[in-house]
Image 1 (cartoon, rainbow, N blue to C red):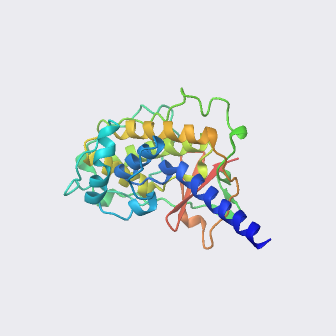
Image 2 (cartoon, rainbow, N blue to C red):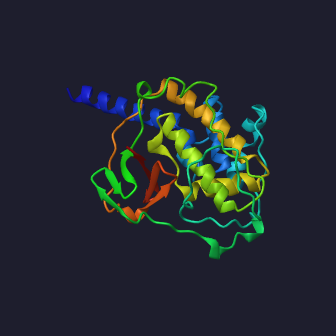
Image 3 (cartoon, rainbow, N blue to C red):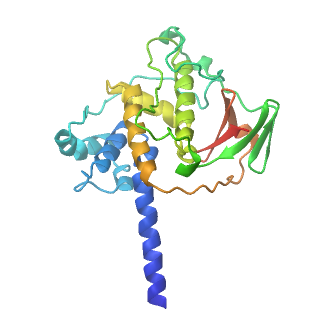
Length: 273
């Protein structure tokens, strides 16, 4: 009996690890981590450490580990940037109206982005009750991951793209807010609302990818493609839970349909009902 219990526990641990690994892209916070996930999707990580160990290394070590497998698989691997160009990264997205077209970017001067321009809008007029945010503009409910049968039939189709706006010129904070809104919408659309990155991590990833001379929008398109493939074959837990200490003050509105709450480095998405 004890032996059977040990086997069951082992299988649960293995299954849980495999499930987490298959959503590697949802955990990637830097370009090199994205490359690792891309190699993992191609089963090309034989000589690489486990993802959680890989994350602990600095950029120089990560680049050295990735160099050969990336070359073999035709993946660009720019060398680490010694000093990344400074980018103002606010803790929260600016309040924006919903995206009508992901290709519309307001043009302003990048030079105008200064620390004094940071916008830290909180969820005034909202009350957090259980798994609902009740605000003056509606009731928003906590949304976690969703099983595939709950999704629109076209959600995981090849033709469904992330379609982040392409940055051309203008206020970087405003661009990042618009791009983040599109990212949240698309992650929820494929049933991965429960594993989205925080705005701060999203903005940092933009800085990291941009500093390496790569296309931010295209990288997210690549990521989205792999996530859709994983989601098509993977089961997800739909359970949701509010962390202790989360308040309405930890939440920010994102367009008319979302409130994004951050606690202990994790995202919690509330969707208009």
